[in-house]
Image (cartoon, rainbow, N blue to C red; front, side, top):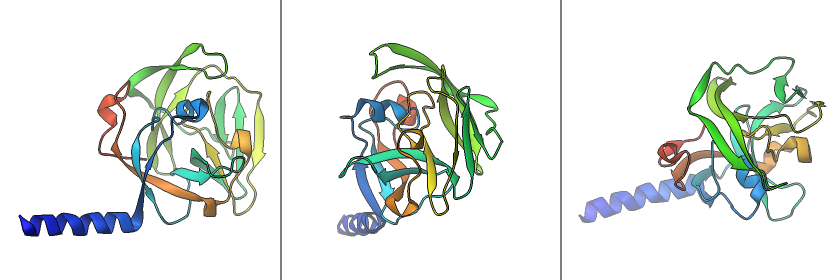
Length: 202
């Protein structure tokens, strides 16, 4: 029993040396819907203590518009890339990431914080930067836009493409302000309940 406790203490020490335990905040309604379906408000996650943001990573970055807070997004462009939204469709350097199949739960309903109305979104598994992740797509709410990512910066895109809080709102960010969200230890029950516990974040 003693050796088991010592072993667990060593494992915990190693984990906490490299990762920060963080709860996705629920006090910002737009942030809460923007991180769906990959994350949900209230999820307890491991965040790498080291800084950096590579294409395809889900990252937590210092909020450039609110001191002491964070933004969360997926890196979909880095220095000198062109990121474009046309009719709600994302293109990176002129190419649309492929979405060959629907998520296990193909539809999701979320409340729009701007008007309080519930809206339905289609969920597709999207391929980008060698990985596959879920993304929500609904009616395009924004004008078409194109952004050239400055050198040594990254462009964040919310996995919820319609109800977003990402670089379309605050611009590109420095990867030095970001840490990768690596693993979900525990999650809130709800629509994606089967995906909310002990899962890697891709």
